Amino acid sequence: MSFDLPRNVILPVDAVDVRLDPDPHPFERDNQVAIAENWRREMEAKPALYDGTVVLLSALAYRDSRLIGRCHAVKYSTFMLWRKNRERSGAEHAYAHALLAAGDNALVAIRMGSHTVNAGRVYFAAGSFEPVDFRDGLVDVDFNMIREVGEETGIDLSAAGRGRRYHALSTPSGTVIFRRYRVAESADEIARRIRAFVAAETEPEIEGPVIIRHAADLPDGLMGHMKPLVEWHFAGSDQDPHL
Image (tube, rainbow, N blue to C red; front, side):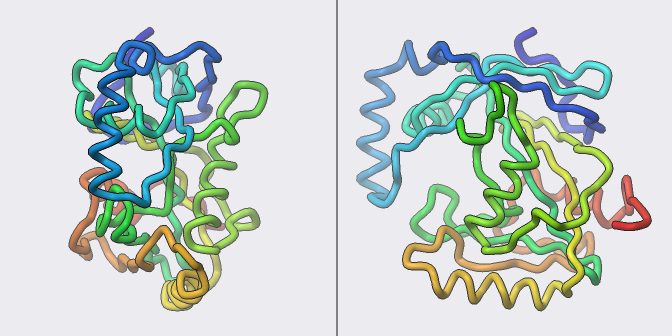
């Protein structure tokens, strides 16, 4: 199966069948020395980094509107070396984005904090899949989205309206799986709540909220994969009349 899916096009996804393989990822197994040396340099640059656990893919395919894949738990230090060796690593990254849509149809993204790897970059609150996001070995994308948005912004999406299906966009930098979540409050009110949450945190992960009001309203620092997602939302794509 390896990696077999269309690139640079938004795909409808009816199911995500990505499973956690208990065996070590070959990239981590074969690069222990390089991983340790790279991590030493990363820590010198950003001492607040934490060598937790994330997952990397060893296979991903798109079949009959389904994403089918295999991933492995790896150290964050492994992920950091992989970022510099994407093309010849035999690994890829998948992550999830909850498109937080306000009652006024604006989108609310976040800007990452200065101590993080993606300092100053703008995208929807998100994080890599972690072992906690898997149920009986199968990734629970909805759980990951709700968990990450809650941890970074304090916004609870568990009762929010959801899009009818997932979508995915695969690029050379990774595959983002996304779904629209709509809440009743205005974008300004959501942003106010996020700023209050960040102000109360001892070590907030984000700098603060970023409101995107239309397709051409692209803020500085926007991650490359975000523009197609923003355009998709404001084009009214896959809109449910109740969302």
